[in-house]
Image 1 (cartoon, rainbow, N blue to C red):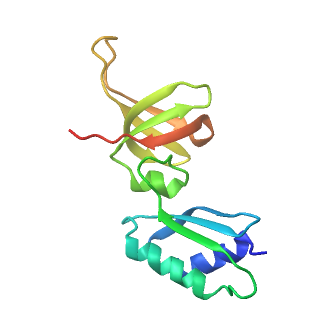
Image 2 (cartoon, rainbow, N blue to C red):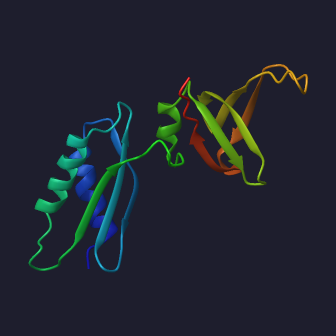
Length: 148
């Protein structure tokens, strides 16, 4: 059976020296391999093809068959790696806290947690403010896509 450690080593070997990193990697019992990448300068189709070819050329289909999927982290997916937060400083996030509360604001900094700039709310007479959220307080954080 192909192991996730084996695939992780191959992917990291290919990504060495680049700004790309693994966001998610899984290997099922039927050898379905899913690799999701991100990078500080983004991930192109050519990057995904390069990783796919590197992994495929270093595995032997004669001894074990496998199915390989390599993709970039989509904008519709939650942020899962601290480097993704750093990459997205200045963008608007929708953060769902572990208690179910939703907080929306512009990501201003990342450290042990994140800091959001919450816009003023005229209806509730709230001024613009900064709020800090610890990583363990977040259930999910997604980039808010705007077409304005």
